Image 1 (cartoon, helix red, strand yellow):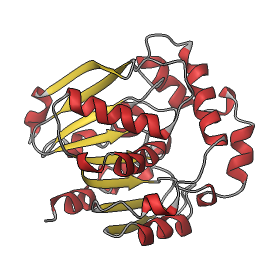
Image 2 (tube, helix red, strand yellow):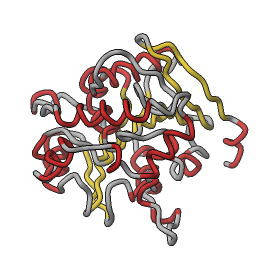
Image 3 (cartoon, one colour):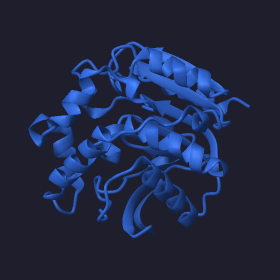
Image 4 (cartoon, one colour):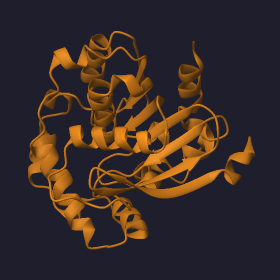
Amino acid sequence: MENWQQKITKGYSDVNGIKMYYEVYGEGEPIVLIHGGGSTIQTSFEKLIPLLAGNRKIIAVELQAHGRTSDRNTDLSFEQDADDVAILLKNLNIEKSDFLGFSNGGTTALQIAIRHPEIVNKMILGSALAKRSGVPYWFWGFMSQASLDNMPEQLKTGYKKVAADANGLQTMHDKDAKRMVNFKDIPDEQIKTIKAPTLIIIGDKDVITPEHALELHRQIINSELAIIPGGHGEYIGEITTITPDFKKSDLVVPMIEKFLNKN
């Protein structure tokens, strides 16, 4: 189980005009981890990766303008991120995979399942947003006023730790904020095309509302829903949620593994 630490590769792949950074851990059935807005592989998944890597091959990615991945002269979109991940997997000769997307990464995972269903085995949506009504009304006012000063320090530090150019932080922030301000609902008919077995997870104090998670659960025919005590990403140990009394046993790893291992 501990051997996964000898099986780590890190690299860049040419994807639709950007250099996309990825990390591969362990061996076994592949699962792709897709980080949240303003985040890196480590700020979203550092606590989760060691717990999953003992039994599976993890492919963790960084999306356009995030972390170590370069930018292109376009706004960010969830559709483009989905297409980028699909090309990366093609470059890595991975035909089909499970996906775990957190927050914005969950919305990207939804787009992957809609746009590239043939590459999806199972899907875990952590705090994923599909509709503007899926978050409280204040969220949109907050996003329209977003400034770098309001960005969580842990995410700023996480970016600066790995980015080739620390000046990219402002660009990433502004592009992420603009994408959310302009967020358009994913149409019901697109969501209903998703056939992949799906596990939907949110926290009971999440920014995503329980009603939205329930709506997604009803629209994705082959889905399960879990509402876990805690805030946005606390159930996977996302960096801004870590408190001094953090315990690995608080994370939803057994639930994830049970879902992935089901026939």
